[in-house]
Image (cartoon, rainbow, N blue to C red; front, side, top):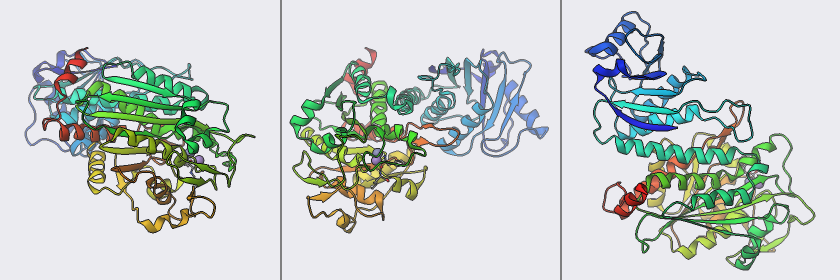
Length: 500
Ligand code: BES
Ligand code: MN
Ligand code: ZN
């Protein structure tokens, strides 16, 4: 699908050829009615009482004499980017046509800024995404071209680039998270990462069981033991800044299926544990987005990928393993496996001398209880990193909420037989999980995002959301501004690479 900016004076809107035009309007009727055919249409609809006041109120018009477009949907935008997103989503809800190929989003009566343009693009993509990988009967996305129609360019091309990047990232993440575990094995995730690694500025390395054993990743190996699918440790590099610039390291939990292992989960709803690689999917998605946007920042992506299965070889409750850090872990519950694969990846991350490490994981059911599916859990002992991530989440409409990390929460992780246990009691489960991870990041700025509630939706509209790709991309854009020339524009080398 192709998103582009179309600069067109409003007097020429009637001649725009499209299957549909979504016309953005202010939340309430304008004091002065707009000129031209579109203004007249809106005025007539308002006068007749057919166009209600209020955010996301829509009116479908078909056919509209004088307009070449087959149909128009008028929609009122609430405040800011969130208002644009809701409005475009509502308008697309009215356009559930299998033949919608060419779409225009008209901003003449409600001009957008760059973020508004990005959000409009994101909303169109989200409303038209179709999962087809294992469902040949599904009608593939019909939309081929979406034009954001503006009167003046005025810096809006940056919004188109950002929108395209978010869409590329979100769709990559949704696609991989949605695939069932037999179509998204650790080896298949590694192949996807290798493919991303072919673009200029990108490089991917993939380690197998032998190399992971040599590294001493005893915790990761313990989880992977019970599965017939061999583990992969994926290392992705994006170089957008000088080699000497310390990278941001992203670590994504890549449990391609979580049965719980010997501490097996109940049968009901277990299928949803195919989404337990949502963190890994968000790292792949973020790299896809980086490929579009090419910000001046260096990023390393680490994905420990394996299944958590019960088996004769599987790790057992009470087993003690030695992590790459040298610390020993008593595995009291094999269903607390995410922290076991992440702890070794966090130890590995130190070799990049990172400016910060952020891990992303569908880590705990307790986080779903605490925050539901609205905000991801954010844990960090570094106030400036936490603030930057929280702000990125707000501005990308992919919000998170900071949770505590007081040392008292780590009490329950004490073990009589190892340096720590992998679980504490039932209370504050998302916090004790974060305290476990924190034992492996003593010398680096670190944050942990628990996306157990936000990475996918259950119920009738079951499916991956692609979160927190928008948050991560926004954070990395900020990092590029922080280390670059003070603008969010990509560096010279990055622009060159984008031209190919
Ligand atoms: N992948 C799950 C967490 C999860 C559960 C995410 C439900 C989304 C929905 C994780 O590996 C897990 O099983 N965590 C346990 C930890 C417990 C054994 C301490 C949990 O949350 O129950
Ligand atoms: Mn588990
Ligand atoms: Zn899990």
